[in-house]
Amino acid sequence: MVTENANLRPDAEYTRPVTATRPPPIEVIRKRPDFLAANRGKRFVTPGFILLAHKRRAEHPVPSDTIRYGITVTKKIGNAVTRNRMKRRFRALLAEMLPQYGITGADHIMIGRKENKERDFSAMKAELEKALRHLAKKL
Image 1 (cartoon, rainbow, N blue to C red):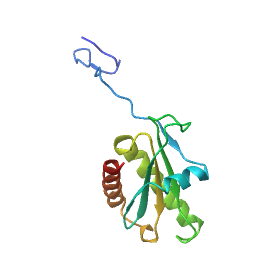
Image 2: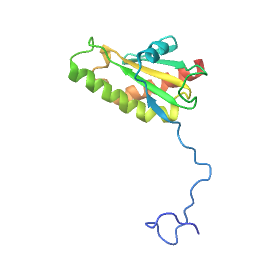
Image 3: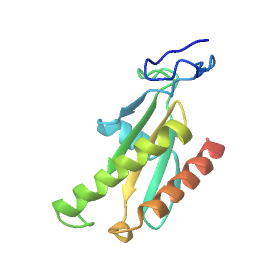
Image 4: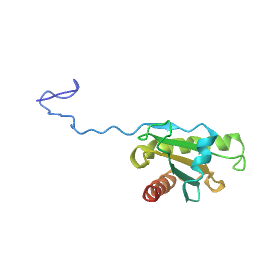
């Protein structure tokens, strides 16, 4: 009997899966040239956002197993409160979806759109999943 947690009942058997895979590392894009390079990649347009995906060059200093993302929300969207709220929602979406559906070795950029001001979070999540799956086929 293998027990790893002291809170388990002594008669309960628990084993950790041997092939537990760790999700790929995720980083934030902060440099303008990386945003411009991603603009040359593939895009997927939804009513709430535009998702860009671009495979990094082999000689890029970031490791090839890393997933990177960036968020862009312009002043056309609204005031600072509205833009910051949209960015927070995008960050939450990406944190939830990128480990599972993100493309390793690629940069992902989410660009906010006016129609997104108060979209349903579950609808945005479904759109992001669809976009990531579509772009994974294209890259």
